[in-house]
Image 1 (tube, rainbow, N blue to C red):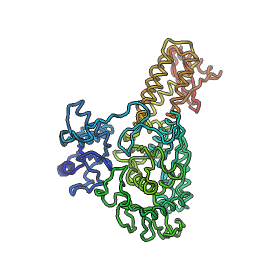
Image 2 (image 1 turned 30 degrees about the vertical axis):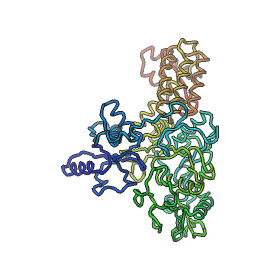
Image 3 (image 1 turned 45 degrees about the horizontal axis):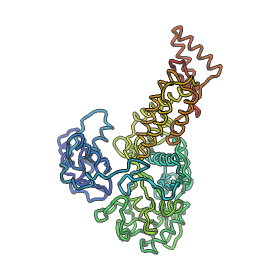
Image 4 (image 1 turned 180 degrees about the horizontal axis):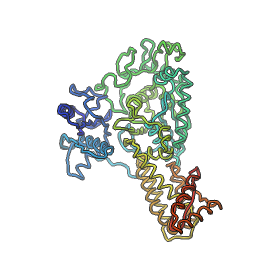
Length: 601
């Protein structure tokens, strides 16, 4: 049973009833993100939970984005004639996400009210969205907006990288893939891109990990950073222009803290420095958080330090005795301290991209408090919101929960590689779902991704054959259609599903022609040129070359003779021999093709 989380009476009543009755019915709550506009629902992180609410009674909680909830509410009215409120759209979103993960079973979704009371709300405010040109959905405005860089022809991007205390799981690489797609596509469009990805190597997690491993902090963080870079290479993620480490930019952080203190936005208590949230009038711009409703601790910053207000966040924290003994601190006028997380990213973004840049990317789990606090620090000093566009990737979920080490459902790249999946297959799995939609991890989904790439590889082998002459098939029109549809899709908030659909429609239309009659030399070159252009963005396509050595031809002759005589076991053995040597073998109406890929089998 799926229902939205508001007063939670329906959810709690159902959960307690089924529990008392001993029935195996799972109750799932749908919660909006912080700063949401879904009336009737609550985000428990930014609101005071109702007294009856007991999170442990729920099987799980699914987060619903505003735009998805609104879109489904409108579709219910338009396509089904069901006129309900916006919380019903959120509940339906949760039910549909759940349905993607289930192979069988019954899902009941509860629509609590009608839509009449929402006629004057944004739910039915059909604002014109630009239909042409590059546009992104901006978390800052909750709107899809045309993209124009601050400096013509140049784009600056900041991406939240990993905390290098342990090898990251797929959740981190999902947002790295989004940033990679964004960067590649902007370059495809002719922009010069400057990309910065930070490494958090001086914080609670890295220090605790170093103590636990009995290693120096730098030794541990460099080991994990090396593993991270190896993973990026395996996933064909282009390197950033800068990978700044927090530990190398502490002086910049100290300078920021001094400026904040001087301007009255920060204060010192018992050797720690805090940002005074109350001094920034429009705190909450990104997450749309209302300070009056925010409960203590929601900033994930209630440490054992004395603050004027629980909502204030740490800029520099007093070093512990253990950290002092290990030399993990910096000497300042406030005492021996180390930087908090939020000021680290603020300082590095400011240094490498300036007071204002084009795009900040990350995951939805970091919108509040991390990105909100980054904005607060720099807005207090510059009067500007550091990034004009904020693009947030939805989370990776596994076994019905957000993928994390603490939940016990995290999967790392080496684990997948050990099971026989290639970095390319994992890249495609992470890439093919639109970045704003949650990505459900399963072994079946990975197998499906691998299967799709095998189909693409098969096409590329057909394309590698010798040109056979002119065909009447409209090759040029088909190429033009691919390029136009590919760009139209990605212009629309990086609609990767539409872009991939254009690619596979292209290969499906051409493959029968290649198998049956082939293309001319010019047509083949044109198709390859288009695919190389598309692959500048995708980073997935492998180009094949025919294997035409005398030894290969001799094996093919033996195999053809065996097939002619009906000795199919021998024919299969010869085929397997070629495959073990790294070749692809495909039988077509025009004969057998043996090929291998330019970057290996």
